[in-house]
Length: 254
Image (cartoon, rainbow, N blue to C red; front, side):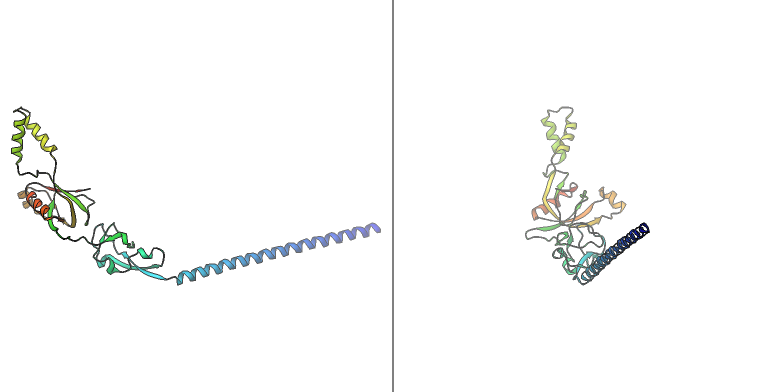
């Protein structure tokens, strides 16, 4: 009888301890669920507040390219557009009105939707005091040349008034009448320095390729050329006018 009572008491204590442990686990799980709910609620409130702040952030209008614009092109009203962006540290560098960009020239190639900043455009080149403008038909133009650039203008002919025939005769006499004088004259003419007509000719405008008819091209015996308006000194302009009737003129970028 005593053993039966002792075993019954032991079983009761084990059941009580097991019930207590189960209760503790349930309480711990409830606390964890409560903490998780609080954490998720805090994150939700933070996200909502951030959305409200971004919605209330001051918006500014900036000028963007409404279409692709080539480097050196003069900006027109139809090339530009207005979009709203959030105010930021870049705001002082943006162009904020179309009037501030219209009539100026692009320093770089502009893509559609690209915002305009101070360094991407510049004022159109003008004719300084003591300078003049002249239109030249160039036989060769660098591919990267743009309005506002400065180039050297050179000619394949000689700057002197002597003819090529006279030069060949003088060189032949200096070689004491050798049979190879004609070939030496040809090599000397190739190695002869180019005639530099202008060291810094500023490009004012680049025209389209000439549309000469086939008859005019054959009559003039000249290849299709590009008309470019340059800003040069009066002395350089006179030299160019004299030279362009004698030999092709080329633009060389530095």
